[in-house]
Amino acid sequence: MDDLDLDKLRVPLPPLPSAPEGFRSGFACFVGRPNVGKSTLMNALVGQKVAITSNRPQTTRRTVRGIVHREDAQLIIVDTPGLHKPRTLLGERLDSLVRSTLVEVDVIGFCIPADEPIGRGDTYIARELAAQGNTPVVALVTKADLVDRAAVGEQLMAVDRLGEWADIVPVSAESGFQLDTAADVLCSHLPEGPPLYPDGDLTDEPEEMLVAELIREASLEGVRDELPHSIAVVVDEMKERENTRPGRELVDIYASLYVERPSQKAIVIGSKGARLRDVGTAARKQIEGLLGTRVYLDLRVRVAKDWQRDPKQLRRLGFDQQV
Ligand SMILES: Nc1nc2c(ncn2[C@@H]2O[C@H](COP(=O)(O)OP(=O)(O)OP(=O)(O)O)[C@@H](O)[C@H]2O)c(=O)[nH]1
Image (cartoon, rainbow, N blue to C red):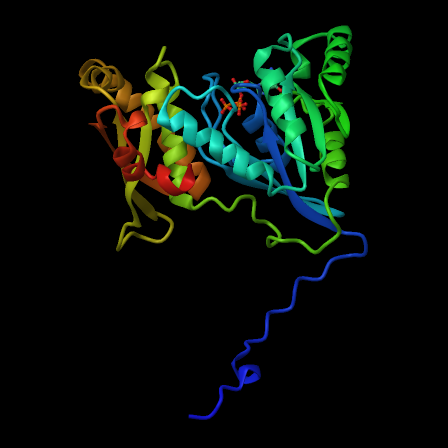
C-alpha cells in the first residue's frame, strides 16, 4: 500500500471570525460562598437569565456559561457552585468542579457581599485563591444596594486586607450600580483575540438543561430547611407537538422532580396537589419565555432515596459529567 499522504487528509479549518483591532475574548469565573449573588450578577451582566437564582444557599450545582457581548470584547462568564466545606458526595463533587474551573479561566471574580461581615468562608476561599497560581483575581463586592456608601467603603477596605487583588469593584446586580465598570475591569484581563461564540448566543447550556433548571427554581420557592438540597430535576422528554396550527405551536415537556424521601414527596406535591400545580404553572411561564412557544408541562415527583450520597443515583441524575 502507498504511504499515506497526510497533506491530502488535512481538512482546512474554517476561518476564524474577524474582530476589530484590540478585541479581547476569554473566560471569567465567579467564585464565592453560597448565596453571595454570583448567578444574579452573571445574569445581570449577560442581560438575560441564563442561571437560576434563589435565596437558598447552594442553588447552583453546575457550571453555567453566560456570554457578554460588547463592542470591544466577548466575556464568557463561568458561574460555579458556591464554595463551602463539603458534607455530602454532591458537595465534594461541586467543590472539585470549582477547583478545576479556576485553572482554566483568564480572570477570577471573587464575590463577597457588601451586607455581611467577612467570615471564615471568605478567608478560606481567599487562601485557596492565593494558592491557585497566576490568574488575576478581581474582588467583586456584591449587593452594594443593600448598605449605605460608608458601609460599602468599609467593606472595600476589609476586602483589601483579605488578599492580593488585581482590582476591587463594588457592584449591584439589583440596581445596576457599576455593572459596566465590573465588565470593563473583567474584560481588561482577557487576552486579545476574536469572539469565541457567535453574536447573539447568550449561553452554551443545552435547552433541556435550562428547562430543568427553571423547574428546579420554581420548586425552591417556599420550601424550607434541607428540602432545597434534596431536589433534582431531569427532563425526560421534550418535543414539538405535531400537527398544530400555525401560530399555535406547542412543546410537550415531560419532567421528573426527584426528592430523597417519601415525606419530601408529600411536601412537594402539597395538599391535593396544590403546591405541585403552582410549581408547574410558575415553571411553565418561565419556560414559555425561554422557548418563545406555548408549553405543555407534565411534572412527576419521584423518590430517589438519598441521591446526594449515592454515586449511582448521582450518575442517573446527570451529575457525573456536570459535577
Ligand atoms: N439586594 C440584592 N440582592 C441580591 C443581589 N444579587 C443577588 N441577590 C440576592 O441574593 C440571593 C442569592 O443570589 P444568587 O445569585 O442565587 O447567589 P449565588 O452566589 O449564585 O448562590 P449559590 O448558587 O448558592 O452559590 C438571591 O435571593 C438574590 O436575589 C443584589 O445585587 N442586590
